Length: 198
Image 1 (tube, rainbow, N blue to C red):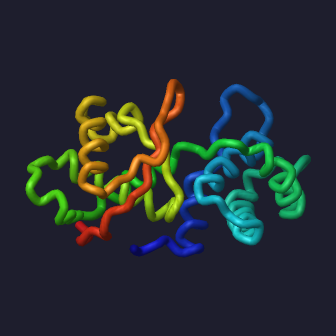
Image 2 (image 1 turned 180 degrees about the vertical axis):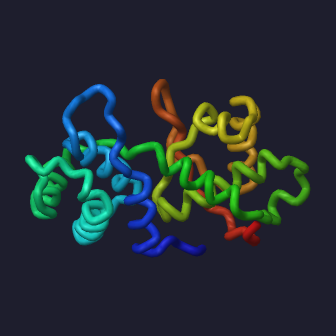
């Protein structure tokens, strides 16, 4: 299975964690909320400390002109803030789903296991799960029919049926059952599909 290399992951993290425009404050420059946003995106990929340092360095270089100089006048200031905030960053940002979806829109996928089922939506869900598996590797990822219906322009019931069928076809494995406020956890266990860039 092809995996994203460290530089590709770094580029995604930096691009996806651009500081947000905050209309509710008059304070200029990157503040604590921007650092937490960056860390929530980084949390998706479970970096070790060296990777986190590399990503923070790239993030600082990309956005340092937007820094609040009163608090973050140097990379050291930013890195110390990151180290202090990292243990408090409990949950990843949801942007990983958008990144994975964008990948599926640039490629055509062939899953031999699905040849007998005439459903473009099913193939799209399989492709999305495959792309998510590249981010999470052997770890599971959380996915709900609610979170996918907008991307797929399908009903929640149809999406749920697709996820269930992918489990039956041994492409997905449900590794955790969801409950109110929490999605089911899945792991991609299928073969690597044939992929053609559009």
